[in-house]
Length: 83
Image (cartoon, rainbow, N blue to C red; front, side):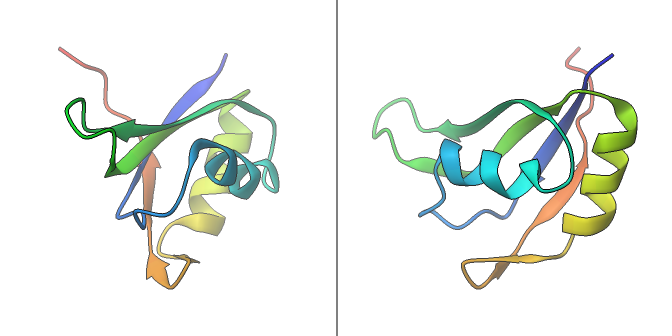
């Protein structure tokens, strides 16, 4: 079963493809999506990555949480379910 991760504090320059490539180093990525402002189309500085299985997700969290992308430290944790 896949696991969805929240990725925060992203630099504005990161796009879906770069996000996916960053996480592919730690397991199989099902999807990677930067959340954008609906009015301007600019990044809101966070996104979601869906990993194929829970162990890949745990590896990605361990390796990437508080790591640097384009000079900015990112936050990676398991996404909370929407209510």
